[in-house]
Length: 188
Picture (tube, rainbow, N blue to C red):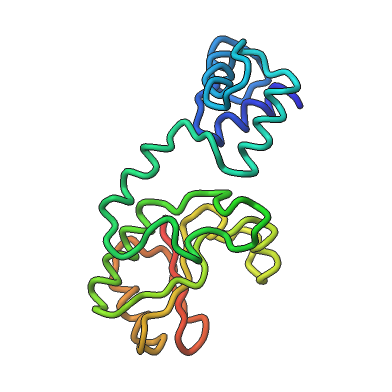
């Protein structure tokens, strides 16, 4: 693996190696040390074979995020959804479920829509990995890939009624009816 690739993986995992410039400088070595410590491997600041293997595994399983606590903070204030629910994570079973995190903006919007609807809001797709996105016919630049989109239905509501409620929300970037009951919405 190149130094730039290592820097990109560290950045993805929430560590701060600096720019992905291919130079193993002070910030990169500090980020490697922090990752090594979290992964429970030898801490030396050098991304050797063991560290590279652990980085790949961490990315695949979405473990050892440096921001684990902060990423979960906003979930405490989400009333109707949790990160553990089906269809919040990618359901493919191959990517570890969270190639990206659902954004706080998306989940707060979903919570507000659920509150205003007064009926259960049932997600059918939120986060997707590229493989699952392609398998379900998603577009290559789908906002599901970055945790900024959700497909859902509201129990007992036709898509037109749900879409009217969704379009009243200022955070909505784009929304459309998927079928007679399901709606897609995405945020910036």
